[in-house]
Amino acid sequence: MKKRWLSVLLVLASTILLILLSFNANKYPDKLIWTDMEGYYVYLPATFIYGGFKKEAVRDTNYIKAWPGTDKIYTKYTSGVAILEAPFFFTAHILSYPLGYPSDGHSLIYCYFLMFAAIFYMLAGMYLLWRSIQAYYSNTAALVSLASLFLGTNMYYYTMFQPLMSHIYSFFIFAAVIYLTDKIIAPREKNSSRCFLLFGLSAGIMVLIRPTSAIVLLYPLYQWS
Image 1 (spheres, rainbow, N blue to C red):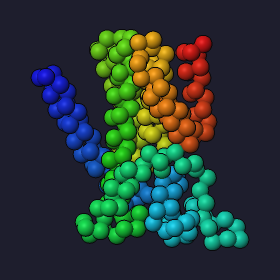
Image 2 (cartoon, helix red, strand yellow):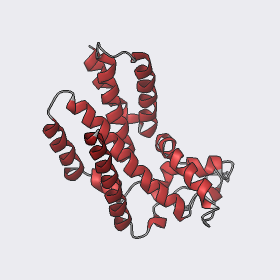
Image 3 (cartoon, rainbow, N blue to C red):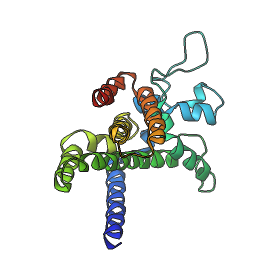
């Protein structure tokens, strides 16, 4: 029980530290919903606030333009990132009015919650990857691997400075696919039907984040072969 509480406190402390780092990194959080990052995100305000892909649904109209001959804007990005951002978007939308922010999908409260989203999915991906590594190697090896991944790759940058880009969301889904693959092929796993369902959901969202990420599905095919 004591060990569990220590783990909970460690996670809480890490989360608070990451939030503080994210706030420090983003001096102008209201500028986050812009260019590529808005291209991933625009599905949410367009669908749930503006009733369609109208010009009012975007801020950066120089990047996300109307389709020639129409007044409808379009985005070249698929909707996977927006699907994962949705719980944070809805929370921000519900809280925007009582907290005094415009409920327009672009005000500061939406930016803050999207920053939280990147931190959440980074931590969730780390946890799933930890569980996968821990099944084969020591806790020390797992800890060194995850620390190296966070500090030695662009993961830190895309968590703190570019939280609306697809990279952290892809990392979470990749970690989920690896974790669920191990669960499915484990002969002792009793909830294989649920794991198959979650695996299919993860694989679908993974392709919706970036269609080229479908190559990651070679991993479970290799494991099952």
